[in-house]
Image (tube, rainbow, N blue to C red; front, top):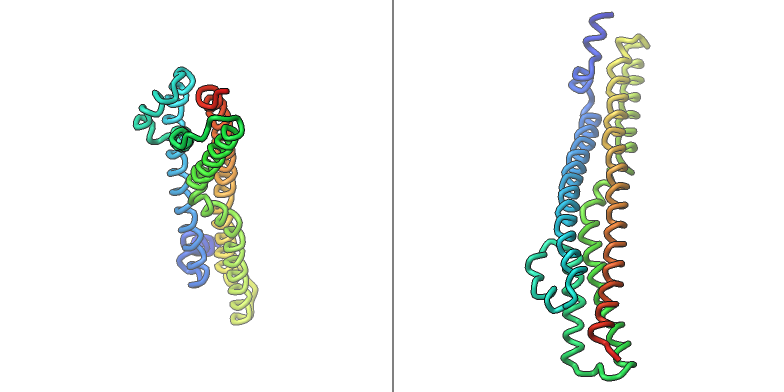
Amino acid sequence: MDNIAVNISGWEALKEASFLVQLTLLILISLSIVCWGVALSKFQQFKNLKNANLPFMHLFEKTNSLDQIYDSKDRFAGSNLARLFIAGFDEMKKLAESKNNSNSKDGLAGIDNIERVLRKQMDTEIAILESRINWLATTGSTGPFIGLFGTVWGIMTSFHKIGQMGSASLAVVAPGISEALIATAIGLLAAIPSVMLYNYFISQIKKEEMNMNNFSIDFINAVKRDFFKS
């Protein structure tokens, strides 16, 4: 029994596993590595975004002049709120240059234009935040099934050996069962963190979307107050 225990250790099971099971495990491990790489880059992306947004919002809340904020835009290249402000301010300057904002109707049309520009920029910023997290969703949804394929193949190998050897002893079935269980475990180890990370980043993206929505409202109010005056 001691020899059997050594022969069916995890490492030995991997070495003796069939090519398809080894390929399955390689796919799962590769997906897991990619997902952790994506997760680390996303953690850094959200950290940098927070560090860039805080000083910009401090300037926006403390400064009454939109022109002064715009002149300082180069200091906040990493801020999505700053990019939102720049997009809205550029549209506001175009409206000012058109000299068609003299009456209330044109002013309301100008506000609509600015809101559309802000919405478009928000969509761009959200797309940037959502980039690459599809790897997390894909691994989370397919990982268990890829592992299940390895599990089924390992069990089929065990039955095939039973047929060849004419015996269902532990020495015959243990290697196939071991590789089957390892495939299941690796599939779950790849999928579970990916799902948790995906849900976390989705919640962070929703928070950023809410922050951009709130900033857009504040910006529109500032434009109405300082630019579209009756």
